[in-house]
Amino acid sequence: MTGRLARRAAGLAGTLLVVGTIVFLVFQVLPGDPAQIVLGTEATAEALAQLRAELGLDRPVAARYLHWLGGVARGDLGRSLSYRRPVVDLVRERLPVTIPLALLAMAVTTAGSILLGVTAAVRRGQGVDLAVLTLTQLGLAVPAFWLGMILIIVFSLLWPVLPAGGFPGWEAGAGRALSHLVLPAIALAAARVAVMSRLVRGSLLDVLTRDYVRTAWAKGLPERRVVYGHALRNAFIPPLTMLGLQLGALLAGSVVVEQVFSLPGVGRLLLHAISSRDLPLVQGTVLLVAVAIVTVNSAVDLLYIKLDPRIGPRP
Image 1 (cartoon, helix red, strand yellow):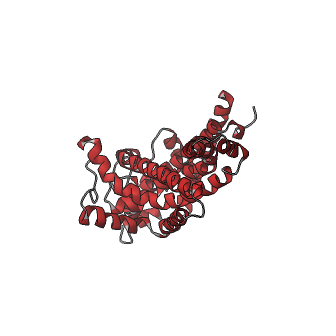
Image 2 (image 1 turned 180 degrees about the horizontal axis):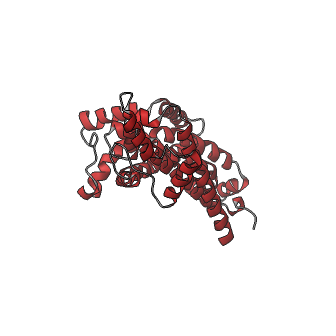
Image 3 (image 1 turned 90 degrees about the horizontal axis):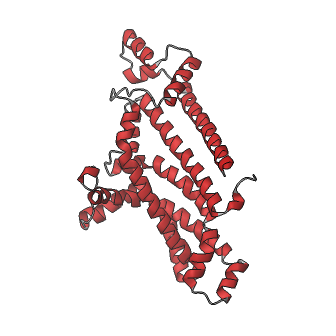
């Protein structure tokens, strides 16, 4: 087991190195002069030269890459041009909003997809199955920002039970803070629930035809025990792949939802960095999101082995 974890850790480190290199190179090959983009066409030559030196643009690409890579290894992603503060500090201040939002959206995705997927699979061909399939079609068709506005109108204006936006901070109390994340989490999770519930339904329909499930039915076990105790554990392994990808997508896809609900998270920070052409902040934020996605997927791989040891590599 130790050797397996070591191989996984080495693979994760190599993947992160490749991801970091790609993120750096992408920003190097973008057309235009970053200093000119930041300062505008009216900037003087002296101001452009000063900003190029500040960004390290006056050095060769290889030297800039090694300097940037050394900073990343030390946890230094540079300084924001618009905030004049370290990128790491800016992102760290906003993680207490984005991470709970993504986790809450993941909880909604998991619970909703299991409930709808299992219900549709067990009642295959019946009215409930058709209703679930129709609902998932709607979930796939509705954009997150539009659903977010509808949720605000319904649950904050017409029926004021949840806040319309903003975030009071965790110091205001966990209950109050979470209440500001409920509607954004639902808007963020709706499309994922539609995808995952269809995947759970298809996987569970396949498992329900297996011999060991038929044996459980023949023993007279209750439906809940057969479905949730025997079939769902194995049926959930393929959807687990998608869940790992969905968590990364939730972290990256919170940009629009955070803007709609005025949440001071990483997504809104990235949107501000793009609009203000703050290249160090954009580069650092994109790298951290990519690292989060890669780390989550690696954790999902380890969870595979926990659910089914046959999936792991040979010793």
